[in-house]
Image 1 (cartoon, rainbow, N blue to C red):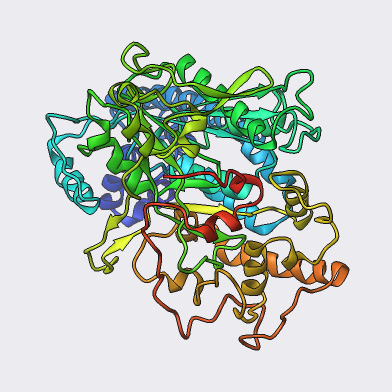
Image 2: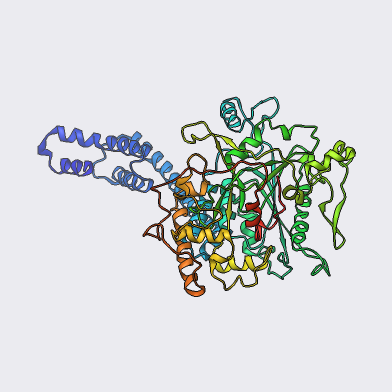
Length: 588
């Protein structure tokens, strides 16, 4: 517009000298406006270059050059700057395109994304999306983290919740935690939920996969090196950016079949856990957890164990009762099917000083153990606390703890509970762990477990689902909203919403990618309907409500009455007959 005005002034001198004066000053004004626009990023380099070259042309070839020589220098200088900026922007654009391509390529090659693309169930898709977001926006806490003065108040409060104290002179960095577990046909449901709960808090995750089930049936390995399952566990970072995940393969010895008890298979496989821990630098000051992957401490409890002054973690342990065991709420197959009035008592945590292969063997003498085809298994002494009362030598030098001892040997005064006194958790005590029991992707997988693990059921593949085991019966009735009458352990009315005072798994809380909780419950309902059409229904089938597709009714949500006893009940033992609950000799 300015250029047009200048041209009109030249063509129409009758408009007076004022127009001529404006025409003479317009190029200067234009240069200033273009420069300011460029600086303020209101126009891009290409537009500015076009304007400036046009202006320079009016200087060099105009009919009436009324501008001073200085303006030509200014224009030329700006043109040089613009040309360089265009080149730089071209380079940056190309770099950005390359970065975007690389990011897309990395996402396409990410094992977690590759596995997610193969999954058809919505609940697992949601779970994997949460895992991916967890990596992009990780929690602020991690193992080895220094507790700076501004963070001490939060640690003091957290320790108080568990009846403990925080003392910065004792522990001013988060302790390292080493997790050990067997892995076989575990569903991605508990694997993912565990990874979300403990993200960044484990130093090492040691996993052992065997070549046989508990009844010595051959099984195809899922996590061999080079497989997608292996890559998701080991290299995708689902447990945290600095967490080392190692999977070792266990092969039974020639002649084991028929010569070792089914329980021994599991315990012998667990012995590989210590080997992995040692290879990854475990020390006497580190913490070891032995669990099944569907058992996990709450994140808050793990954080407390990393910083609080815990009596069992102080130097100079006798190692007689070194365990910090959980008070564990049980989710049976669905997030909304919770065992009412019953607590599980795993995982188990012990300081490295008391772990076999890590602690001092000169101070803690080995104990005689049972033989299983030439290999040691269960302790013959010191499996119960009363054993120490009759053996002075044993009492003076309690043995170190093998991974199998974590779950099979008595070694804790009581279950650890959370003292809940805040507004969110008003009850007196709360659980400190979760058990994602029987969260299988398909009911065929569930049936296979009950046929081949623990006390196998010969007709597990064909009998009505509710007759497989009492826990399954409870889950079926819960999902279908059927009566609780006759159940040895009823389900909690209201599901997760019925937990009055107590934490819930992070995967249930996170609805950023959809509701995992609702999707899982709905999918399980659909699977049970199809299963009962094929294999029949276990009685009774009376409905509690007329809406079996919904979660259990929330109208009469009751308090979650969970025992905090310091030993397993007989009902616990009778109900623990398969898979991850197979070791019914487990004690505190």
